Image (tube, rainbow, N blue to C red; front, side, top):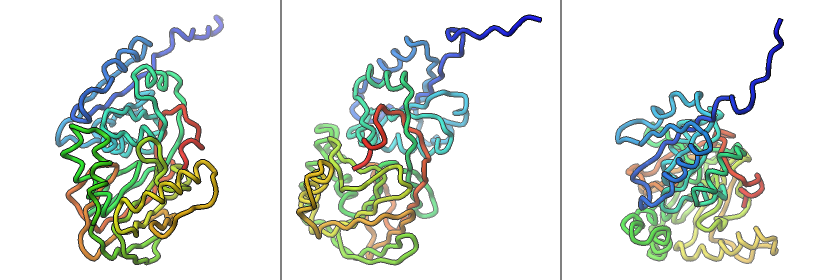
Length: 316
């Protein structure tokens, strides 16, 4: 009888990588072609699928179990939609930054260049994180970063016409326009408990960093099985800048908060949001035609994101 001979590593099946990309994201100058070329140079089997209008995202990942890695190339909306379609399938996913702000990639502390991103795939290190599921008018979608109603959605709406010319700076310019946003009474259910407040908006955060990895507020973790619900009580978005200073101070262990009153944060697994008048709605940077009311629930450990970061690096 002949003894079994171990298969040489060189003869093992090459890693298979599924790349789902949105050709309309950002300004079209991402390094996706170079990235794919580097993966193939490393001997990986790369399958590319371009998003098509009116094709559900789930249709792109029906055979995901046949792949080693998943890559979502686009803006935050593309990445979160793909992650939701791939939730709990246990295939590590790379959030390839091909959009304007790419906040999910920033929260994961990913490099921006093709070589650095290919190295992330090559290393294969991933972290399991939570996702949010949002329900509006009976339709469910997913988000990785945050969902919101009110001033933040208005800011995103006003930035749309500026993004092509100014990129991520469009969001800053739009925020400066929100000097007199609408205020209303919000009606919430936090884990089933009713709550009302008067303010300019509600944000439901899973990841907690804005552009340049600045913390939105302290104590946000994408892997604790809970949202951080942010009640925006300030008269305008610019009055929230002191709270940003507090968040940075907390991140750097520089002492107790210096400012309070503009924001209140609450941890929750389920959230229902309604308002005295319909308010615009956004999730993961995409403005939607739907308005309040909406529901959100946490999906613990729903996705494995590829990153070189450690778990503590993702928390604020």
